[in-house]
Amino acid sequence: MSNDEPTRVVHEDDLQWYETDRGSFGNRRRLLGLATGATKLGCSLYELPPGRRSFPYHWHAANEEAIYVLEGEGMLRLAGRETPLRKGCYATLPPGEEGAHQVLNTGTSPLRYLCLSTMLEPEVAFYPDSEKLSVFVGGAPGTLDAAMTTVPSHAECDFWEGEE
Picture 1 (cartoon, rainbow, N blue to C red):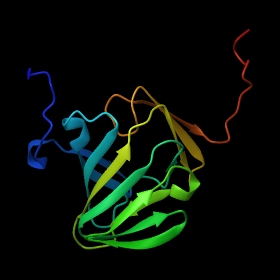
Picture 2 (picture 1 turned 135 degrees about the vertical axis):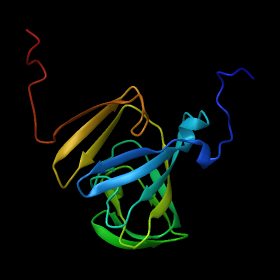
Picture 3 (picture 1 turned 180 degrees about the vertical axis):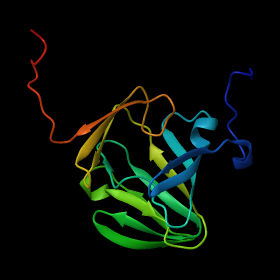
Picture 4 (picture 1 turned 90 degrees about the vertical axis):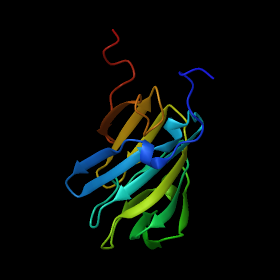
């Protein structure tokens, strides 16, 4: 095996954290799938501090996700309903509106969970609360090389605009 080939087994302690800190949103994430060279199945370890939310409430047009709670307590907002989360909970997040989701830490300690996903691209994610959408190309959402553009979901232009 050359030094350029990914290792298929990693330990979380050997991977760097990627952090998000924006208003009520905040998390740390380790990219487990990327570190092992996975191309069709993504897996990230998340730590969500008390009182924080993972990402804006959203759903994916193409990718299916699942979460498995390792430690802590929280709430899963899924398709408009809130469901308590605790160690051992597993949830699937299908593509489409029925899979709209957001994770919140309602406990007093970090909420640690695995998030697994298919890695289809291009992808479109919809954000019902803020009425916007994001388009991902060149990589699935969550990958480091994906190009993302976000626009209001009601924005429209004629297909031929700017082409003449």
